Length: 338
Image (cartoon, rainbow, N blue to C red):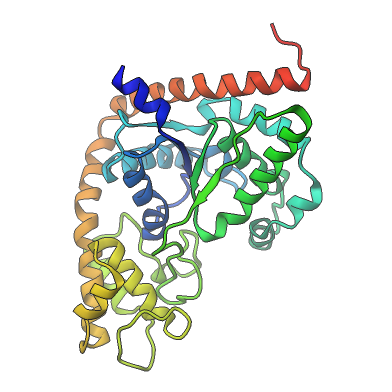
């Protein structure tokens, strides 16, 4: 009974990550680390967003492999299936079904104005498909299915959360309150981890130059080498000033996220030290924290049956909630149900 009452009183949190390419430390700081922290305070649903992933062409065998790798990474980073619901998006058909309904409450102009749609259209000019445009509607369905109260999002996803709220409010205004309007939770430090070589740009798993990106599966030598080459500035003072010192500030954000120290503590620690020593210390701290995660992920990937069982249980738990929401929506819009 205690566990049931705990679930009822906790607010619901939803987050999803695409299983495309190797994840970066930016993904870890901006999403997974927050998920691990929040699973104790919220009723959490964590999805492997493979339906979102196919808006860009994927190699089928690799998509399947990366899906399992992401599940193993979730667990290796500290997500506990007894405390949260971990599942694959496509295992719960309600996501696609609600997205179709929400399409009829979404305007073409709204989708055309989405910054991410413009960016991805420029990168994938040979494949500007409807899924690419419709991405925010599917994301809205993801969130609204679970009566989500809060969504941890990076700065680049704020626009998508705003349109989710707009769509939900539009539906509620027509058919009476149905959807919860979700609020965003934005990490204060590391909300947008920059590329090591171009710190004003977001660190991306699809960057044209991987030298500026630290991947979760990079070995220690690779990590140290990339940090040694990180861009700083002509000064030699280590202080947090994103506008005037984007490179140094980015490194400080990374260091605090992996060390657990505050920006102020980090500034004091490196006061009077050169950039070379600073970059080496950041690299060693990141490598030290990633090593046990990499080892545990490899162990879990060797036990496919265990991972499959977690996904079956997660999909069943997610479907129970999602199908109830979808049934309510179908009833309100007039779909005949049997």
